[in-house]
Structures are given as structure tokens and as C-alpha cells.
Image (cartoon, rainbow, N blue to C red; front, side):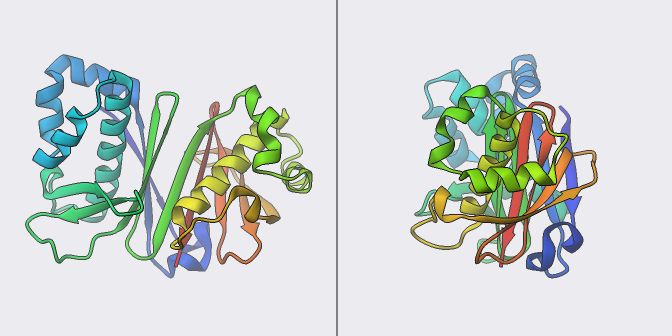
Length: 247
């Protein structure tokens, strides 16, 4: 089972990383499902999940939700293992904090400071991110025409035009709007505040095109009013991927 890994530094995400590295992983849920079928879902899950995590997995009755949840946890643990190569899958346990954010803990070292993690999935693709300090957010969204109908809920025309000027060769409003949605969602996930900022409270004020990478094409560094650092967003096939770090 292939899990794509990408590493980012301060030059990618701005001063919020403060010299640290961020790890992002991508996992095809379809490919993982085939691996589950080949080895048996229970046996497969026991390789990656502890007892409490397997109990949570078993609480989901719909197969689609089970696979999404499992893929997200595997992707997140893979990010952490890239940072701590001496650890093993079952040394890590992911649970939700009181606000619902995923948190990873080390076994048998509950007092060891873990990295912050974020998880996302959309239309058969799971993504996760980990940073050693601060908080992070990752989001993936498949670009679909229906996003145009809900633009007023999350993005202004000024924001759309700003991104359009930064990426003039990007075809179709649905792609640009999906990139904006993913960028704002990643910021909301990275926000260390309660309540979380609303989509319309996050106001885009700058966009700089980025060169294509192995992770995305037509990328841009986005800057939002009152928020330090930058959000990176780009297209990976039909999917917008975005990631952010907060101090």
C-alpha cells in the first residue's frame, strides 16, 4: 500500500514553522480497501490500530465511513512515523480532543510531547499533516460544479477575483472556488481558538503563484487578514489540497 509523503520547510509555509519541518501524506482509500480485502479487515486494522482505536472503528456501521476513518488514521500515523522513525504503528494512538480535533499520543510514553496532526478526506482520497510545534490544518476537496452555487457562504467576489488574477490560466470558477474553500478550511483546522472563525471572517488579501511540485500544480500562497504566515493551496488532479500552520 503506497502512502505518498511530502515534506515542507519554513520557506514553504512561512515563519510559523520557525525552522521545523511539516509532513503531509496522501493515501488512496480505494487502494487501502483492496489491501483490507486481501488480508481481512480485522487483521489489517490490527496492524495499524490499538484496541481503543479498533473499538472506535467498529462503531461505524457504514463501510464507506469505516474506510475513510481508517485511511485518515493511517495517513496521520505515517506522518508521525516520518518524524519519529524509531516508533512503530502501535506506539501511536489517535483520539479526538474535547473540540473534536485529532490528537496523537505515544505509548508507553503518555508524557512525551506529540506533534500536532490534521486529517481530511474527500471522494476516495485521505490526507494528513503533522507539525512538531504549533497547530496545523490540511484539507482536500474534489472540485465539483455545485461549489459555485454556495460561493456566498464562504467567499466574496473580491477574493475570487484576487485568486483569479494570481492564477489566470486556471480554467473554471469551480476550481478556484474549491481552492479557496480548502484554504479556508485548513485555516479553520489550524486555528487554536474557540469558537473557530467563520469562512466569511477569513478574508483573503494576497495570493502569490507557486511553481508546480510533486504534490500539486497551479499552486498559490494565500495571505489572510490578521493571520500570520500563509496557506498553500494547489490542484492535485481534480482535488484542491491546502495546508496551513499556526504558531
